[in-house]
Structures are given as C-alpha cells and as structure tokens.
Image (cartoon, rainbow, N blue to C red):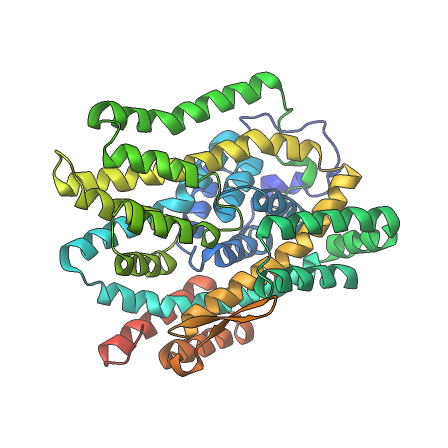
Length: 474
C-alpha cells in the first residue's frame, strides 16, 4: 500500500479548521492516481449497493485512507436520502471531496462505465443469439464472492457505526422493519433520523459515547476532515449548477423528440426513465416492479421472460442494479426502431436511457453536498444522521440477505403472516455450486484476508470451471 507523502502535512490538521481550505480546483489526491483508483473500484462494483459500498469502504477508508470512517458515513447518509443509486452518488460525493468538481464527475462516470459497456454488449448478444451461457457462468462465480464481500462490509461498517447498544437496536429495528414488515424505506430512514435527534436531546450521553467510540475506531485518515474540499453554498453557484444540470439532462430528450417525433420510442423512453430516476428511493428494487409492469404490459418493449433475464444480467455485471433499464431500453428500441436500423435504434435507446437515469445523480450531489458539508457540525443534524447511520447498517444487512437469497437459491416466495411479510428461499432449490463457491469465498475473505480482486478472479474461474464440467451454475 502506498500513500502520497504530500498528504502527511494534513494528518494532524484541525478537522474543524476552515483556514487554508482547498480551492475548488485543488486536488488533495493526485488526479491521475484518483482516476486509476476510481477505475479500479468500478471493476469491482458487483452485488448491488451493499457490495459497491463495501468496495469503497475497503479501498478509500481502509486501504488508501483518503477519507475517515465518520466522513464516509456522513456522505453515505446524505446519499441514502436521495432518489437514485446511492452507491454511485457516494462515489460522486467522495470524488468531489477529494478532487473538486472534476473529481466528482470522473468518479461518477467511471463508477457506471464498465457496467454500461458490459450490459450493452450482453444486450446485443442476447438479441443476436438469445444465449449468454458462457458469460453467465463466469458471473455465476462472481455472485457468491460478492456475498462474502458484502458480509464483510456489514461486519466492518457495523463495528464502526454502532458505538452504543441503542444504535445497535436501531440497526436491528431498521432491518426488521424492512425485511419482516415491508415498511417503506423513506419511512424507516425518517424514523431513524427522528430517533437519533430524540436520543441526542433526552439522552445525550448515548450519542457522545457513540461518536467518541466511532472516532476512536480505525486508523486516522491521511487527509484530515478540515482539509477535504468544500465550497461555500451560494445562490449563484446553485443556479449555475441547476441550469447546466437541467440542460444536460433534458437536451438529449428534446433532441430525439425533435428528430424522431414526440411519439417515438426514444422520446417515450427518455421521458419515462427521467421520471423513474426521481422516484427510486430505497434502491432499484423499490422501483423495478413498476418499471417491469409498464415496460411489459403498457409499452410492450419486451416480454416478462426478457425482463427476468435482463434483471439477472444486471445483477451479475458491475455497476448499479438500476442499469437494467438500459437492457429494457435496448430491447424496446430494437423491437420498435421506427425508420432507423434496429441495431442503431437499440444502441441509441440504451444510451439515452442510461444518460437520463444517471445525470440526476450528479445534479443532486453537486447541488446538495456544499450545504451538507456546511451543516456537518450542526449538533441536531449530526444526531439525526447518526441515527440514520445506524439504520443504514440494517438496510445494508437487508440488501446483503436479499442478494444472498437470490444467489444461493433458485427461487424465493413471499410468506404473509398477518402483518409480517417474509421473503423466504425455497430450500429445495438450493444451488450447490453457488453454495460451495460462497463457502470458499468466505474462507478467502475472512480467514485468509485475500485482496478483493484475487477473490473475485478465483471465484469467476470456479464458476467457469463448473460450467465446463457440466454442473448447473444458474
């Protein structure tokens, strides 16, 4: 592990200091090194938001030590409140903290780029041949590895975020509320924030102990909190970013409407997926049922079986799970190309949908991050976010359980017991190959502490080998 000696001067800086704060164009990490790091992270973003948060936690907080655990969780709390893929928004936020505007842009783009390329290629293979067996076999080995990596993330983040039994109870409560009672994600997060505020008001010793324990846990970052990039919020800055963001978001949709007609598949997809980008609270799963219903039954862009296969591909490729909308748009435009060649139409529809899905993420972070940074030392807000941090651990644990269930078992079923709503695996449908690779991955991650890329490579090879000898991998 290497560290830039230039950062050593910041190690003992006052974290609350604002003097000498970096200008918007100042890089706290050499920009080329930051780009390489974000690209490396982007190649490991399997397993949905839980896996992606685990990758950034391990790389940025524990290995590079570019950001402290508390700041990492502070940024994550804000991103969890926003619509859209929270892991990509977290990458944008941390990229902005380290390298300003261009850092946020690069981190956000690189975070989704491998997934865009991979899913675009797999969509083309699926349309052309209807079979992605070889690719699926490799990814079938990656999914169990991600189960182990996500489990490690839950343990590590939980150990550092839950500094008091009350916060542990809050995390367990959030997990039970979502996994057992099916309570909506925004309600859980709002309740957690309110609980944190009430604890700080009526039992301040709990929050004081939790914050001191969290600060003491782990190695200090190389870059102090006070040295991280920040900008003073202003009306002029906000209006500039809002104007540029809205133009970047809406201009491509306006262009396809002008050149292909207001009723074309491209215009319909651009408007529809722009809308879904604003309502994806609580992760992609919260909105995918609505997307599937509209895409299959209303617009007829693809069949229900196509939707299931697209979701499977999106779950096993790097990047946010919401990337499945790219697959939906690819097939929808291919089947309804208008006057264009079907392949040209498919690529155009996929890229347009990807654009309108992820551009809002940059807008939300670049608009809100300076205000969130300014309020970082507000005691009431800090207490509310501490409560949300605890709930986020429960949310990540729920995502990990969901991902593990769908990786290790061929199917699940919803069991209703009064107010309880349990998503239980069908035990008869256990996947032996996935279970075996998961066991190996757990040993590699927890016992041998192997690097993540090595674990992913070994497990991908095991998945491919299982397919070659004729074992069922999906």
